[in-house]
Length: 422
Image 1 (cartoon, rainbow, N blue to C red):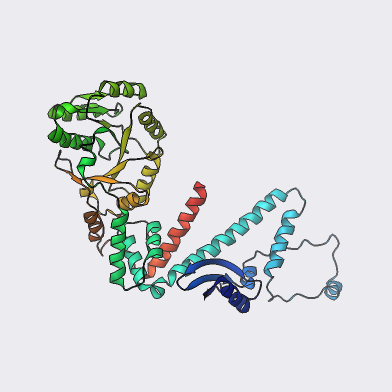
Image 2: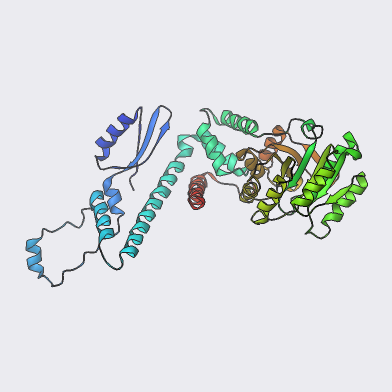
């Protein structure tokens, strides 16, 4: 494929150059604004025709002698490509042919067109990213660093599009500052401990909800006393779920109440209305479980505002964390807590998820000790830690020659996922 790239100051000038270079039948693949004007990628009509599937002509009912056929019909040169307009017309004619298999034929033609589109988009994406190290060395270095740290290709592309021109060191500094600005964190514990209210800790199984609930309860007791705090648990499924929180409550001198449904929750909150703060430890379940929506709805129907904090396991894969947030934020979230920070090889996926979904990070849970292993989130530490832990010996480290292939593949997967979800 002979993809032509034209850069001009205006769209009118770009179109004029396109007609002069490829003719009026050229096929425009994409256009976008760039520094100094616009960029247009296009293909000659002959290249589109070369990708067309062969059209088999149906023979006549009675055979025509070869000599007479040669005399009555001018011979078509085998090397001449079918014009793009002719190819489109034949596709329309094939779809319009009335027959018993017209539906299947139409579906076949649509499949052929989609296959051609996929091939064009794949080659165009590969062409776009392949020359990135030459066209923008500082941007390529930034992309490699961001991807190696565990951040998503989506966020990496956003940073590349907004990155200023400069050397690699300047772009790297800009990238880290931008990530710190986009990462929202709780500035002071006063926003949570002193303000009071009802808080529900939510998240999938094993994210550390019960232990984190105990840590928050201990910090509150130290500041305000045990008589102003109450603990609730909805975990009636897990063996020992009640007992674990009851043990923590007994140590802290705080009563623990079990609720099973929305009616129990409304009654319990009504009885505990004089408490300054109520912490709810919810049952853990898979983000793909339909019961997640029921749990969120139960909290929303409690008759009292409940602030929902999502536990994000920092050791999970980025796609898994993305699913967790999408499942639990159907009615909104008031923030998140990053758990198992001490076990995570990279903080990139968790930070990427918090940045893209605009979640306010409240605390970092780093171990099992109560209440020592709970720390206020610090954006400078988090961004520094995300890039510091990357090692050249990692099997996930990309080489320069693999950057274009990885990015084009990620872009294609993202596009297919968007189409499927749509």
